[in-house]
Image (cartoon, rainbow, N blue to C red):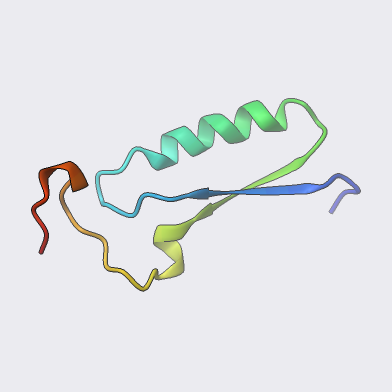
Length: 64
C-alpha cells in the first residue's frame, strides 16, 4: 500500500458481450501513468448485481 489516494471506478456493463473491460483497462493505464493515484477498477459483473445480466444489447429492447 502507498500513501497515494486510491481511485476506484466501476466497470458498469454486465452483459456478456460488453466493451467495459477493454475500456477500463485503458482508463487504468492512463490514470496510473501519472503516478499520483493508486487505481482500481471495480467490475460490477463480478459483484453479483441484483439485476440479472441480459444477453442482448439494451437498444434492441429484447429482454429475457
